[in-house]
Amino acid sequence: MLGLPRPSSISIRNIGPFDLGRLARLHRNCFEEAWSRADLAHLLAIPGGFGLIARVYDGGLAGLDGMRGVGFALCRVVRDESELLSIGVMPAYRKRGVARALLRASMDRCLRNGADNMFLEVAVDNPAAQQLYDEAGFERVGSRPDYYQRADGSRVTAYTMRSHLVGLAGRRDMHVQAGTDLGSGG
Ligand SMILES: CC(C)(COP(=O)(O)OP(=O)(O)OC[C@H]1O[C@@H](n2cnc3c(N)ncnc32)[C@H](O)[C@@H]1OP(=O)(O)O)[C@@H](O)C(=O)NCCC(=O)NCCS
Image (cartoon, rainbow, N blue to C red; front, side, top):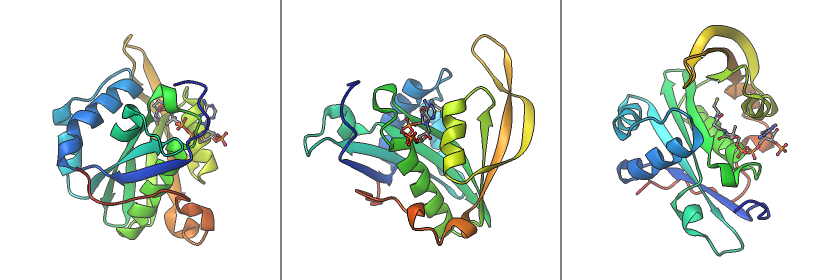
């Protein structure tokens, strides 16, 4: 799929109970260390937890991957704070704006669910994700030594980043531009 034009439309919808299989597949495709269906079900079941899945449509002709989902985001809202627990896009669909759409939809949803801020952790050796978050208005507020453990056993420090959702709420580009469908999953 590499070399395709940017998708004409990115559709974001809620992850529902019947999406666990495809969510596990997406996570496995995005991260060295795959989370199990049970792990993912647990995250979605915690109070305030929710997930979003992104689909792409290329000129109205969606491939199977595009229809099943090419990216995901998992979040949690606890009172006035929220956390981006994970976000990933399948390698073949990266650099086409999918993560940006997922992040904006996540921020928008957390704000509507009562969060003033969103926090996240990102590995110091993950410049792509850092750039994504910088561009979305996140700022570094701390670091956590040895936060991540790699498959080879090595440890990596994480930055903690924060976005003031309330401050961004008035910005027009806070909202997903096109094709957003936050209907229930299934
Ligand atoms: C990080 C990740 C989610 C980005 O997904 P994506 O769909 O390719 O990102 P987008 O196309 O929406 O990019 C939005 C912005 O993020 C930044 N960005 C994305 N990929 C980048 C890269 N490889 N290098 C530098 N900046 C990058 C850019 O600022 C980009 O804006 P631009 O296209 O106008 O330059 C994706 O690379 C991924 O799934 N990585 C593996 C999982 C992961 O690391 N998740 C984050 C854990 S904290």
